[in-house]
Length: 383
Image 1: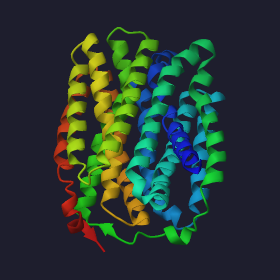
Image 2: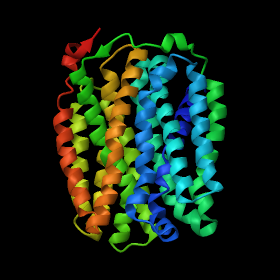
Image 3: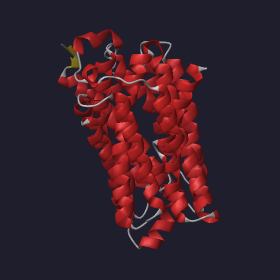
C-alpha cells in the first residue's frame, strides 16, 4: 500500500507541473483577441516559465544547503499552486506574465528536488519511477490542453487558466504525509561531479531535446488553427500529442531500464520525433500523423534525458544535483525555443520554418546522445 501511495504522489506531482503552460496554447486565439497583442507576446507565457525553470534549478543546490528537502518541496508546490490560482482573479497580460514567472520557479524546484528523493529512497527503481513521474507530467499537459477550451465554453477564462492550481492541495497533503524530513546538511554538496565537457554535453542534449517539447506545447494548437481547425480541435491535437507522450515515455523508459545502455532508445525517440515534425509540415491530414509520431519521440526523449543524466553518478545527492544543474542550463536553452518560434510566426505568418528548425535541432541532438556510452562514464567523473 505504501508503494502505491508513493506512485500516487509522483503522479500527482507530475500532474501539477504543466497545466500553467499547456492551457495557453488552445486558448491562444481567445487571448490574442482579448489582448490585441501578437504571437511574440503570447510566447512569453510559455517561454518565461521555462527560463525560470532553468534559473530555479541552478539555485537548487544553494537552497538544499540551507533547508530541509521536504520543506523545500512543499514550498515549491505552494508557490506553483498560488501562482496558478492567481489567474482566477486577474487575466491581464501583466498579471499572466508575472504568474508564469513565479509558477516557473515553483516547477523548477519540484523538478530539481524530486529526483534526489527518488534516487535516495528507491535507487534500484530510479529509471522506472522517473518514467512514471515524467509520464504524469505529460499527462497533466494532455488533460489541461483538452479541457481548457471546454472550461472556457462552459464556465469562463478564469477557471480555464487558473483552476489547475487546485491540484496542489491534495498533492501537498500527500507529500507531507509520505516524504520524511531530510536534514539539509546531508544535501549540501555533491560528493562527485562530472568534467566540464561531459556536463556541457548533457546540458546541451537536454536543452535541445526539450526545445521540441516546449515549442510544440506552445505552438501546436495555433498551428492546427492555421491549418483550418477550430480551437477545440486544436486543443485536442495537443492533448493527443501529450497522451502519446505519456504512453511512449512510460513504455520506452521501462524498456530502457532493462539495459544500462540507453542509446538505442534515445536514437529511436529522436528518429520518431524527426518523422513527426516533418509530417506536421505536410498538410492538414498528415499533421495528425505527425502529432502521434512526434509525441512518441518527444515523450520518450524527456524521461530518457533525465535517466541518462542520473546514470552517470551512483551517489543519490551527486546525481540529483547534477540533474538539477543539467536541467538548469538545459531549460535556459529550451526557454528560447517558443519565444523565437513566436517571432518567426509573426514574421512569416505560418509555422513551417519553426518545424524545419526543430528538425535540425533534433539531428544535432542525435549526435550528442550517441556519446552516452555507459562503459565510458567513469572517464568523465571528476572527484
